[in-house]
Structure formats: structure tokens, C-alpha cells
Image 1 (tube, helix red, strand yellow):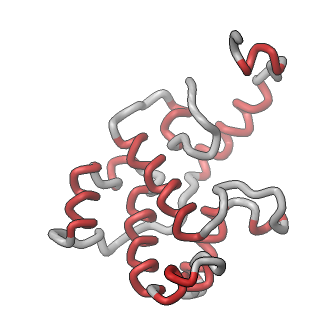
Image 2 (cartoon, helix red, strand yellow; image 1 turned 135 degrees about the vertical axis):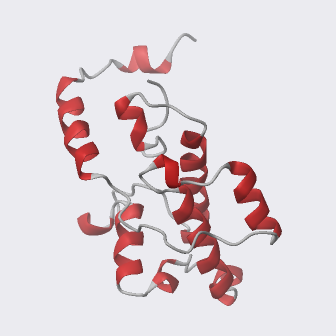
Length: 152
């Protein structure tokens, strides 16, 4: 398994790999752009470090506008459009990969030809996957920096 932690779809843990893993990664990048922050940000308070947790909480409270990049005047003035794009990102981030759109469907939504699925699940983590992830982390041996950076 290779990839950047935080951008890998949950199904990587179960070795069920489909074209939908790229859709998940796209959803993370889109959400980061809309919110003006990283997927995982250690500078945030602990309850706000994971962008998907913040998205889930804001969705439950009906406050998606609070997630819009506060440093981008353009994002702030187009808040309702940004929220619609957050829904696109959320569709791409469904933990059940069968509920994610294909990239061609995402393109159709961006072109205005199609609408985002209306019955989205804003619980982005499958409890079974969280248990697997914890067990998987216990088995991992930290690699030396020289191994991680590769040949020079």
C-alpha cells in the first residue's frame, strides 16, 4: 500500500481497491481548497484537527458556511456555491465506496448537467475500519528517514 495518509480511501485497509479510491482523494483535495486548510492540521485544537470530523460536526449543526475559507474573500462572497461544492466533496468521501460517484459523474455535476446525490451519509468513518486502522498502526514499524526519502 502506498499513498499519502489522509488522502487514502478507507477501503485500502481491506485491500478492496477500485477506481473510487481516486474519487475519495479528489474529495479530500476539494474540501481542503474550499476550507483553506489541510485534512489533518496539528495547529488546530484536538477536536478540530481532522477536517472530516469538522465537516461531520458542521453538517449535523447545519453550519457548513462556518467551514468556508475565512481568508478568501471570493470564497466568503460565494458561500452558497462553496457549500454546494462541499456537498460534491462529501459525495466523493462516502466511506462506502459503492455510494461514491465516478469521476465522470463528478465532472457532470461540475458542468451543471447533474445534481449531487441527495441522501449523503455525513458519517465519514466506518467504525469497523477505525478498529482495523488501530490494529494496523500497532503492526507498523517506523521507517528511517533515509528509507522514506529514497535514493538521492
